[in-house]
Length: 351
Image (cartoon, rainbow, N blue to C red; front, side, top):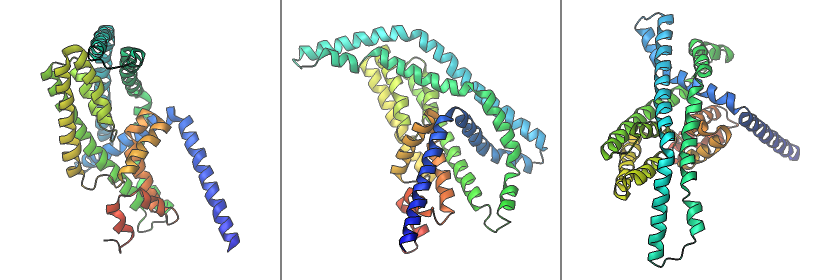
């Protein structure tokens, strides 16, 4: 009994050490892993279209070329929109910085006029317009840099989409044609595809509504903020908040307090309608992860893989959860990751 307990502890320590080594390796190789993950998830999204074209008797080569052209076209369109508008925004930054300095000075004067004791150095450090604008620009530049890595991503995507049709047969062969050989594979592909598909639609709707609202208000670079809202909407919990900050700041320095307030209300309404009401109804039980796990996965994958890890945090955690549920020795981890509504699947006594 004592030897068995000691062996279990040693196994646990070895597994934890292996986990740390794997995560350290992923963090070190992030520049290679991120493009691969993007290509992998693009492949998962494209599989239904590939199967549809095959059912329509389209030859494999033609179907492959059609999907490749579609992916490259959409990708390049996104790069062109972000790249061109970001250049214009960068050229206009000095003007916006000067306006923000004036606003901060007026705000500090108002505070002093009302006999409120505030250290000016603290105000300047917190509301430094240079830091704020540099943060916005660096965020956009990091997204554009990832999108510009199109050759490597498309090359991997092309090979993955070619190999995708043979993966089920390989899994069956590895698992000796067991009846449930493809259960994990089908579950991962199905849930990730469903999540990314619904998220793409809701993110597109979010971006379109933000564009129309900002265009009506008169905020500069409405297309840029709409595309940013579309991309960052894939980040759960905080993505929409991050996307709203630069647009609200720009509305403040360009148009004034009232229009900045209107811009903030626009983001709140759009994200409430789409993110809080529409998306949960469409997605049903959402992603099969508890709320705290979604938040922790956002922090963890963001730390390991950077901004793109935050974008892909939910589908990555979903895949890990499903894979862990297939092994009895790791099923307990899958149970911890699941929301309370799914506990009945593991324990029938829980209603």
